[in-house]
Image (tube, rainbow, N blue to C red; front, side):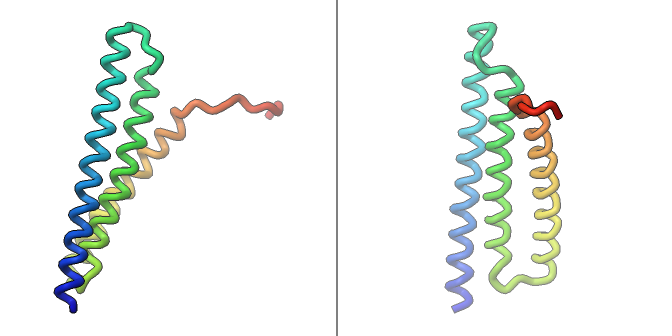
Amino acid sequence: MEEALRLIASYSALALEAIVALIVMYGAFEALARMVERGLRREGRWSRRQIWLQFAQWIVLALEFALGADIIRTAVAPTWDDVGKLAAIAAIRTGLNFFIERDIYEFEPRPERASGE
């Protein structure tokens, strides 16, 4: 039974890692297309900041899926070494995610406040 669970977890993690690759590739192609559009028109409707913000959102999504894949890989009969590696990977990915999301929040355009605050 444990071996069947390991196999299912392995294939599930592999599927999530494939999704991560697709997300990053899609985001990169989208950013590249918008940069080319911007370069050809000299003043495209997308600023560099908007392009970066959109790409950063794709990266954040990919990091979440990658962390899920790592958790699944470690879920079936982990050793202390596996748990330690997962903790390190989770800390790094969570840190990256935190800083990217903070940058997204800082750079995202927000409507002006209606009240006089």
